[in-house]
Image (cartoon, rainbow, N blue to C red; front, side, top):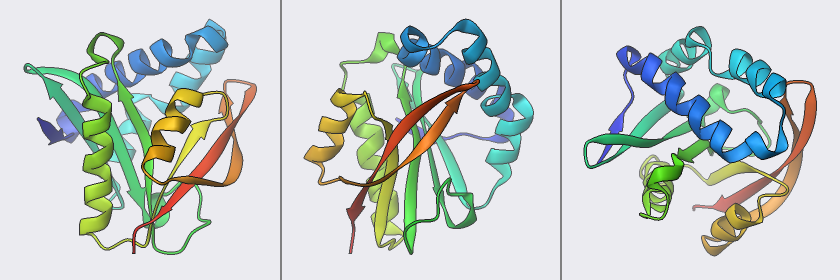
Amino acid sequence: MIRKVEKADVEVLAKIAKQTFRETFAHDNTEEQLQEYFEKTYSLRVLSTELENPDSETYFIMHEEEIAGFLKVNWGSAQTERKLEDAFEIQRLYVLQKFQGFGLGKQLFEFALELATKNSFSWAWLGVWEHNTKAQAFYNRYGFEKFSQHSFMVGQKVDTDWLLKKKLR
């Protein structure tokens, strides 16, 4: 089941966001870098502001009544980049490690694409870490192609994210 994250869920969202980011990227970042990133990106204040933005939505995916991961999508002014006209950004898609292998990431991703299509956006796009070849291969299977890149800060460390896009109409 996928359900929209409400403002009352902000503390749970912060916990899941930090845990999934740590599980995914701790091998490539110091604890100090992670903590800086969490303060800048996943503080209760920042997440509350994001949840109030009318050009953004966040969803939890459930597995046997437990929150297993989350998705954040943006359009209009909420997008992290404005390189495409009439575009829908899939900004965050994370599944807790213990729930990986159940197809939940695929479910969330297809849900995001349905939202983009249902709302008649011309493009869907996302950023993916240049070294995350598994995710890149997944997105390529859906027809996403690299069109640009940008810097992604984790604390003081600069990573490069590839920007991938797919024409929807």
